[in-house]
Amino acid sequence: ETGVTQTPRHLVMGMTNKKSLKCEQHLGHNAMYWYKQSAKKPLELMFVYNFKEQTENNSVPSRFSPECPNSSHLFLHLHTLQPEDSALYLCASSQSAGQPNEKLFFGSGTQLSVL
Amino acid sequence: QKEVEQDPGPLSVPEGAIVSLNCTYSNSAFQYFMWYRQYSRKGPELLMYTYSSGNKEDGRFTAQVDKSSKYISLFIRDSQPSDSATYLCAMGNQGGKLIFGQGTELSVKP
Image 1 (cartoon, each protein chain N blue to C red):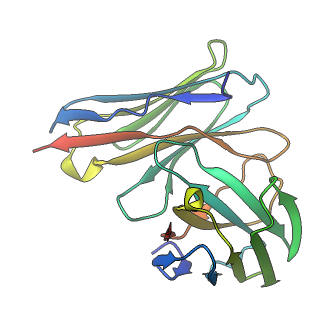
Image 2: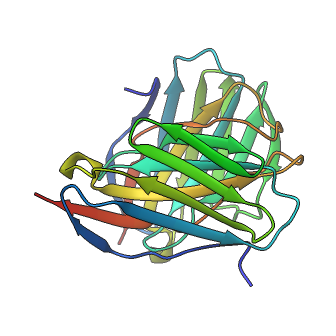
């Protein structure tokens, strides 16, 4: 295991539902990330937290709302999603953010399907 | 033009073959080059990390960077079925944001 745990592994939700994705890292890292991975597309960075402070919001729609209560936990709150939001959502952590040689450790992801 | 271009494949080779995976990039500010491997239903894991032009070897894997041509490669010698995965190139600069390629799906047939 990579030391980054994501739950749930799979999620099916309707467009009017509200759900949350959870990520926990056991590596003592200070930075945590949300990425979106769609088929045949590059990983898309969504949010970055460094020492619990959000340092990057990559023009993500407001129907995605991140929360980082401490350096070990990261949430992604979802509401009124669209079918095109169906994708694999990956959480990652690194020692700190903003370093040019940062090495990311990824969780296994949550496969999200929006009906 | 995309910052990073990677042939999505799929690429299918027989066991024991030499595999070459490639990425091209347009941003000359990139200084750090990485290869991640992603097995089915798993997240990416860092496989190789290089800085500056040249080669870096780790067992059956060799990462090559040619900054003058803005081209990086990952070579896998004596490929095994366990190497079947999607390989993602990634690049970073002083700003710290990693840019990923779209990944190449590799299948090694026994």
